Picture 1 (cartoon, rainbow, N blue to C red):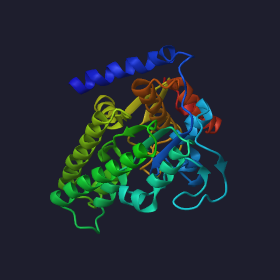
Picture 2: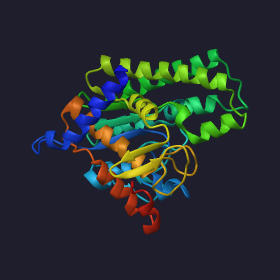
Picture 3: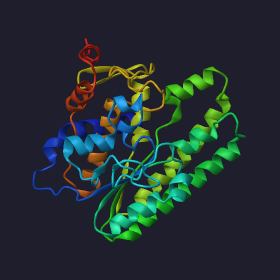
Length: 319
């Protein structure tokens, strides 16, 4: 019950925040990111993600955040194309991020003074891959996945903090997997044992608890608790969610803006990514007094509608 009250209080704060963020508050300088497909630029991944915008693209477009020069040429591993300060790689686990040098690449830009605010949103693929039917899975193996991922995130955060005494980090928790249409379909098809999904949920909660503890212990690390807010939203709105006058179906995936999830069943569309962008802007303000005015819900819906054919955009309007 406390989680519900807390989330509702945060929602009220979000609605008021554009008035609270004073014009004289400093914005961020350079902004960087570490993550997976939820942070990698959507535009390069046909057919589903390319129909939407990711949170990095939204904050760059709608708030002018500086994620570095944008390139259509390959930037070199682990990146492909996109913003120079966005090191996220589609499909990356926390092990991949370490092995490929996402953290050291961004830390180098922090040390050079090109980036002073870092977003880290990573770890979901560790648990999705652990549920692969071709891999042995048990409660103990899932506990090891959680411990390993938490250790990797501590390494990433520590590397970024060590790069500069002025570096600031927003660390995001990872929402549960049960809300993904892809996971629900795999359970229904008998490809995931429900008992193992339960064990995975427990392990993911331990991982998120470790991230919260890390943010509490480090004054230069702020928390964007996406898991808490997603959990409360799923409890309050199990089928449809209303955002800015739009009505989104959270169970049925599709690339039209009336769906929370894209047709691939794993990634959220522009509205969902806009809500992540809103929460990331809020976290920067709450923890560091950085003046990034959050997007309003209607602004987010307008962005989604601008990407859709008119007939599809009309479908998202709530009756």
